[in-house]
Image (tube, helix red, strand yellow):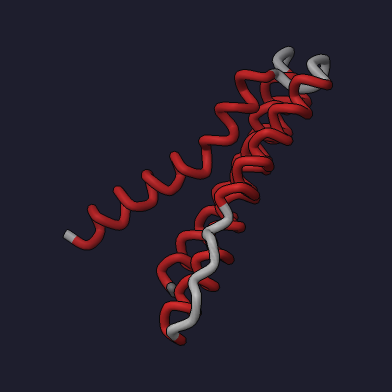
Length: 123
């Protein structure tokens, strides 16, 4: 479980770096809705990863205690993704829909990159 916390800490660092890039892009480029959509999607994607980390802790704890295992929060993560898309659809002048969906996937892309870097460091 410690490894999952390490991955989430790396996710937070990458998320704040991405938010800084999105803020610069939003402020200094003509593509402000695209950068705002990426930031919105990345925010909800990081929130989904945080939910997954918390639920995995509860799942691990219940398995070690031998009690009934709770769900891993699939519905919460699904509905937060729907909320991000609903915000982008309801405010199209501020958020680009496609970039919001791409932003939702960014934490998982960070996760794959982190695992590749970790694998290369261990060999």
